[in-house]
Length: 303
Ligand code: GLN
Image (cartoon, rainbow, N blue to C red; front, side, top):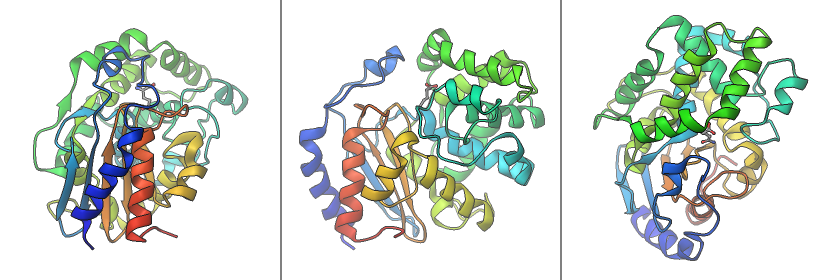
């Protein structure tokens, strides 16, 4: 497979879409990222890396980090995770309050904001410095370079995160948050502010394409956990665009409002793409098109 050529073609073909849509303006530092950025990486399970555009530039990974959180929680708690959070697509926005009220404080899935708060609450109950545990996991899984938080993004999330505060307190009122809501929120804002490049994300996600082995060949998840994390990514990873992604891309994927999307082709590759402007649903517009082109040109998808 000539991934280098395919990536060059994709970068060319998505150009007209780059800069269309809107950046995540509700988090001010994200609104200041240049709109013309586009980067993409394909990393094969053998560790071969193909890149195009701004693939080495770090950006705010936002909700992509929720995948690391879920994997960690599954390692710590096993199936008990699913007593506190569902695994059904939400069909509504990632920060919706309505569904949580109707469903008595059990978030639909671990990738909407409410679900990620519950997952972090679980992690914090095991480990007081729970977010560092997530970063450790990322370093372990990806290995190549030290990864950290973007302090400005974390501060902006803290300052503007009124909806997330509402969700955390709502969860607490339903008895689905063990820790103090402010503590869980602090962890959540840090989690969202992790900064990584497409290349770093692809390395850190390698375990989901290899049945659990990290980029350095260490076992960081069981095959059973990997199967499940990928299933939840397919059905819930891109919020209320999950159906469209399955149709157009055909791979488990996870997006973040920083404009990153990571997709997994089990047994073959991890693909990461970044372009900051988003669709109405909060997924990178150019990124989605790039992934659709990748599975079209390679004729590889889980279907
Ligand atoms: N930090 C963002 C929020 O809480 C994460 C959302 C996302 O990436 N979809 O709103």
